[in-house]
Image (tube, rainbow, N blue to C red; front, side, top):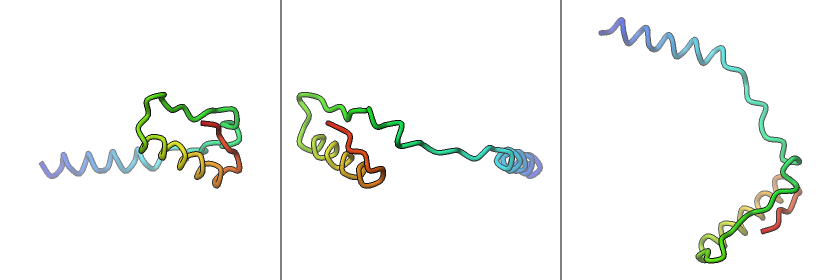
Length: 66
């Protein structure tokens, strides 16, 4: 049983060492996007959309319309 666990851990370690790093998201490519909110959105959903809009603008300088 211990050897099976050791083999599994070694396989996970080797797999993670060979993984390619992620390049990330280019926020400038999202400049034409909209934040979509349903017509019957509850107040907390409206607040979440506004908060996302504010934080996204703070992070990227781009104000997405709701």
